[in-house]
Length: 330
Image (tube, rainbow, N blue to C red; front, side):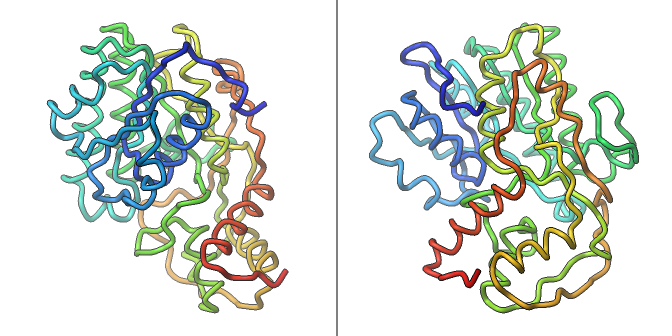
């Protein structure tokens, strides 16, 4: 169970791209805690310096300020690295609909730059962030790899293209790539602010401030909310996976299904609030239901997620309230 027992060769070095972001900074912390070396790469366009400040004096950590759209930066970042955990990307379906050209540049060209640099530097494993959004309008639940529908947003398209490049780089060049289709990840250091903030931290922050959160749609859409510790486990277990498992994409989730309105009620109860949400129009490009079949990741990567939605929610509320110095009521 989990990842804290995992061992890598002594002196192993990990590159985490997007290291100042939510997922990236949690990966950095976990790998340093395991005793291995980490190089972080971020251009701080969406990542935040304060997410990685705590590691700045750590003897096993170095930070590179740089952009994955620059091939030389990617080459330098991959030098002497054993494992690449590529998280750098621009997220958000609605924002991608507004800025498709930028998403092409960062999420496709940037990822291709990283894959090629990893290939040229002899990296052992290249693990990259994909997304449940690649399932598009395929209605079947649970979502199962190999049964995808029509893509609904530029963001989803960039992740689908990344998966195809991953397949080709394994097949043509022998680079072991592993695509992780994240399902609605949440946890500490996730940005609660801004128009494109993820729903759980945004709702927590609004409720703590006694504001009424807006649910887009009727609240009956469902998600497979996945706590960050499960995502860390998946990344590190992919680094231990066999080459037979390379060149493919895997669902990374808990395998549960929460309706948005039920998640909201869970937060309200946990925070001791009595606040009714506002219902707004559905968002363009959003998938209605999302629930993962994780059997492929379990079988091929040894993925065995420990953290349920309820456990994760409890931990994340604890983190946000302690960060803000707020005493929760329930």
